Length: 454
Ligand code: 5GP
Ligand code: SF4
Ligand code: MG
Image (tube, rainbow, N blue to C red; front, side):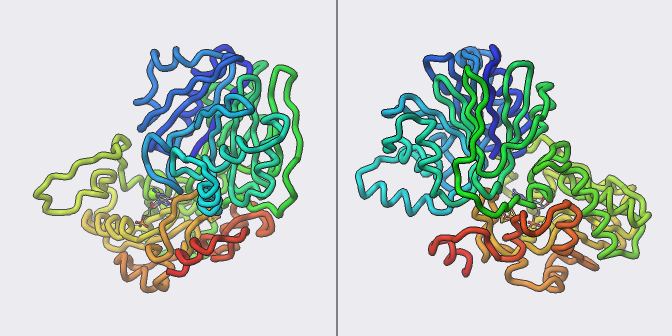
């Protein structure tokens, strides 16, 4: 998911809308904005893309100088308007809105306990559990209740809260997901990725630190570290795939990481070939790096259609599966008669990769050498990335040679764990690499473990 917040600007909702535009790649299922006019919070949320959901009329209803917004892609809970964030509730502490990037692996356990005590939930979201705990807190104010409730909450949370008088940001002590602080004139802005600042001409100031809470109100910005210290676990998959290449994530350029991953990949897995072709868009930056290191020509041999919505309807009497073809089409002139190095960021189930390899071969490539800019993905993520169950991950079941055979490639090479970490410039002590190693930085639930064993 992606979150955006702003405090102290007359056009708060409109700037949040623009910020969400830049974060759209982090979630396409639903989106929403809650704004405060200093007295009252108002909410607008719906299923679909930012550009489809918001219009003049809707934004006009969101008056006030502070706002938070969210784009959702689900890792826990269902996909419906009930799960669309920000959530807006009223309790003994007054009106509170919240939006969340991350995942709380113990939320379903906690939810069952709360339900036994009589709590009524209106969504299947893990985030709603936090709201229930806030509503029950005897702390003097929301600002004291937030760290009290999150102190023992395990998992990934980069969260924004909005009350009529304050914007509050808090990041879990391991810092799984990014959260950046910026300045726009006298206003403060907070976003999952710095590319949201670029779009509204705000300046990136620094990251909200792991375990840090920032409270912004009419008295200014106040920072504290109310959560227990933990070893940092920055999600390296943000650099591999999830974040936009024009963002600074965990203080480091995503494009630079991907370029270096591509260079490392060329050193670890060279190929006797003619051209380097990325699977767009996720493979582009690494492919440029691979080409630069290997001396092979970089060619845009696959063209992506950017206008594929979520509800693509296939012809009923389909003679072949359209799936991948709707999104990608080969440039035959570039591929015909060539030995191709095909670069992608990851293989999850392997089904897409197989179709792309076939497509490139059918377009006339004589050889297809697949190179992947991270190690084999062998475990699910419990911290906010929607990787499938272990049983659906091809690398959890097959060796590299078996995967090569399955996707029908002439050769297959994955970047090593050390190569990936070095390319991103992170030491293993501060990185989460659990989906590649199976070693998770937190405890995981029994339920989750069973899923992992399957
Ligand atoms: P596969 O070959 O496993 O079917 O698909 C691999 C493709 O899925 C890659 O091109 C990669 O960019 C994309 N991908 C990687 N991680 C994710 C993810 O978390 N969610 C989605 N929707 N796609 C992903
Ligand atoms: Fe990121 Fe993988 Fe860790 Fe999830 S398990 S937080 S995707 S590195
Ligand atoms: Mg891709």
